[in-house]
Each structure stands twice: as C-alpha cells, then as structure tokens.
Amino acid sequence: MNSFDYFSPTYFVYGKNREEEVGKYIKTFGGTKILLVYSNFVKRIGLYDKVVSALQSEALDYVDFGKVVENPTSGIVYEGIDQARSEDIDFILALGGGSAMDTAKAIAMGVKYQGDFWDFFSGKNPQDALPIGVVVTIAASGSEGSPNAIITKEETLDKQAAETNLIRPKFAIMNPELTINLPPFQTACGITDIFSHCLERYFTNTENVSLTDRMLEGIMTTLVYEGPKVIKNPKDYGARSNIMWAGMMSHNDILGVGREQDWNTHHLEHVLSAKYKVAHGAGIAVMFPAWMRFVVERHGLMRFCQFATRVFGIEMDFDNPKLTALKGIEAFENFLLSIGMPINFRDLGIREDQIDDLVEMNHLGDGITKGFFGLKKEDLKEIYQIATKNRI
Image (tube, rainbow, N blue to C red):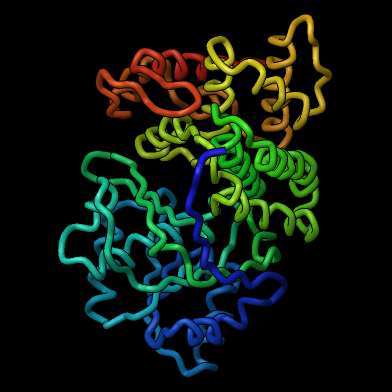
C-alpha cells in the first residue's frame, strides 16, 4: 500500500424525508442566501417544493438557477457564476444528480475567482469556493461525497475534471425514495457509473491492498445482487438504499487510498458524452468491457482472474487462467445487459468511421497514459474498435 493523505468532511444525512431538514443544515454551515441549482426533473418529482418549504421555514432567502442539463457545459456555469455574484449568494444548494452537483461545484469555484473558472479544469488549483450542499436524486456519480467536478467546454467539446477538497459538499442529503421516479435506463446508467468507479480503483499495480480490494469487491457484488432487483421492482427501497450508499462509497475515495488508480476508461468515455451526448453510464457500459478485452491480452491476467472469481463467482481454471479472466469479462457484460445497458457502439448510434475523431479528442498526442496499463494513441483506436463489436 502506498502512503496517502485523506480528508472527507462531508456530513451525510440519510433516509426517508430527510430533504425536509435541508434548511437546518444550510444554517448549520453558515448559509443565508442560497442559489438553488437544479433541472426540471426536480420539480416534476415534487422535490423543489419540499426544499423551498424547508428554506422558508428557516427564513432563508433563495434564488433559482434551474438550468442544469445532462453533461453540463461551460456556458451554463458562466451564467450561474454571474447570477450568484449579482445576487450576493453565500451558499449553493444542488438538487439532483451528478450534473447538478458538478454544475454547482464549478459555480462555487468560479464565484470566488477573478479569472476564468475553466482554469480549474486545466490544472490550476482554486484557493477558495462557496460552500455547497446537495440533495441527491440519483445513485450514480458519487459527487455528493467527492472532491471532483466534470464540465464540458462548449467551444472545443473538451470534457475535463477539477479536483479539490474545497468542493466537497458540506452536507449531502440522501433519501433513496427520491430515486424511485427515475426511468429504468437512468437507474441502470447510475449503477454502471458506480461499478466503473470501483473498477478504476480495483485495476491497480499497487501491492498489498487486500483491504481495499475486498471493500471494492463488496460494493461490486452488492451491485450485481441489487441491480437487477431494482430494475425489476423500482420501488424496492432496500435495494435502492444499498445502491445509493454504494454510489457515495465508490467515489469519495475511501476505497482508492494507498493504491494506484486507472481512469483511462473514463477519458475514453468522456469524448462520447461530449461529442454525441451519450449518457455517461451508457458510454461506460460500452467502454469498460472493451478496455478489459484489450488489456487482458497484455497485462495483469491474475488481477482479471481475481475479479472473475471474487465478483462473479467464476471457478478458477489454473490450467488456463486466461479463460477464467475472459469468463469474468463476459459475466460483467451479461450483468450490464441484464440491467438494460448497451455494450457496443451500434447500441449508442456511433459508427466505426467516427473512431479517428474520438481518438483525436483524447488529446494524447504521442504520449502514453498512466494507470494499470498505459495507453498510446494507437491503443485508444484499438479499444474503440473493440467497442464496435457485439462481443457476446
């Protein structure tokens, strides 16, 4: 295990109807005038009215910013920054999933900065940010507990991440009942995103990480168990509870400390959602098995075998470990299919003749990526080509 620093200050408020307490928690963390960052979905499920009532009961002033879109873009962030400044906002409350939370985080950094907020998505570290609270409506991104935000720059379709503890939410209200109204496809996308956050930590070259291995395997096996249940019965509160907490646990990095991580698959997917408006979870469902099938031929065979045997219960073939590894990848693909996810480019409406554009959008140049297995430009192309095939 490698040395690490870890700091996770978010206060979690979990359970039924806890959104009714949001005003109390905003006051606890010093908010007096709040920017509400949300999309229309929040109004459709009645959450907006509940939150407004809770704010009014605590005599808190608020301003609406209901412009959140899936795969949030820089233009909306600029609008939010301008509104927050003009209204003298001192606290931001995100209502929704990863898109709302990431938009709120980018606004929070931009309000306190005299330059372009995109600097923070180009490698610069912010020195200050407005405090943020969140009310979560989908188990997916884990942004409610993470120091990360992802935004797409409109002019270039460059999708990048910022990371700083300044944008970890002060509190996160998590009521699994708020996820019941999600369409099955969005629920499945969320489950896939959670699974991917585990995989990006699980596939590592770091030795002596058995504790976090087992924790990651615990979350992945939980998703395999609970995922099909909640797709079959969307009102299964118990399944949704486990999935929602898994989403937070998978991405607040308690499972990633002390170990090298591999985020290449996220970068491979980001260009899909930036260019083609693909739902992030759907893109991940296509790219992760493709990445696995590419890497298993080159590196880390026994790590793939461990994944197969521990997560999917595949019997280890000691005479032919590669067969075990491939069965694990196939089991993962079958799981994705069982919850209604796509597994190839055809399902996403992306053609093979568009692959060269996708490779160029990764901005790799002649370099090589970091991670479990470093990728060169030609490797990206081969992985995208694998993604065009129906592999089952």
